[in-house]
Image (cartoon, rainbow, N blue to C red; front, side, top):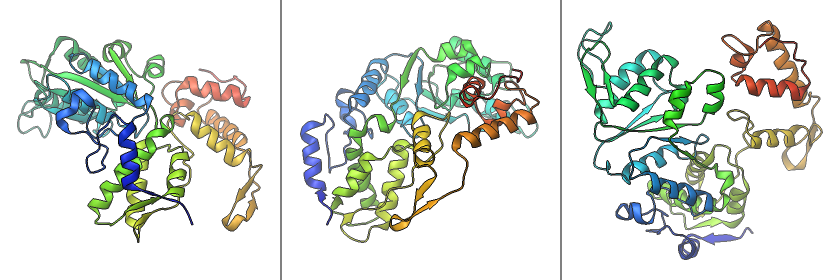
Length: 377
């Protein structure tokens, strides 16, 4: 029978060691203690997270632009909101824009607004996000997806604090602090001329790198308690304990989707729970991620190469698959794409664009896979 851990005993034990105060075992701080003891809804006590929160407390009282970088699901929006709430602008608006979610043709109007008649369908004046955020903070999520043609206008409003609505002549002054976030490598994008260097330097006045969950495994137990109790209350489940074996498995998992993946998995586990003990089976390890990070390469290599083509089935059964190795498949796929692009690697219609990779990353993969560099850049 698997060992079980009591929520009460776990939370009380954590309370003696963590700097975050527990209220009803939620691992969250009271908003009144926001800037003195920690930040709301940010659960954890690891050294990596403490370093991030230390940077938040340092930069929050200033008006400097902040660039938050981190993998998907690491909590970039929470950190941006924490900076806003700890700043002198906390009484102002916190306006969010996801640059990847708005079509490029509409993004300029969304950010800067438009006058009546500025374009077909503009039947009335519209106030943009910069005007709505006046006196507060504008959070530009997925800034790496901002179209090149809009980047000079963003640079101008950040530097000069003024802009014009689309189709308008009047200059509008903006008292706005800008915080940006991205999961993309902007340095590589600058090298590939997909992002303006001057805008990058202006945005990265104060960069904050968020650690992935695999780099702060000591926070997993606190996060599991936090999410489990939250969803148990929401879903009216009477869960009193968490299986010790289940908790150990959760702590060992790499969580490629980071905190968001863990949160969604705990929600699913709570929904499926039938008794007072929370347990479940871990999800299959995700094998893809942006840019091919080291964990995805390692997990893929383990599942295909180190097992020599043997994949375990149910009840210990094994099936030998007559498949190519991952390296062989990748070599063939890249070569086929290069043939399709007539050997063009970088630029519009090149192999790197087709594969969704930076050209430098593609060249490195070609070198590692032994693909001869007979192709043109």
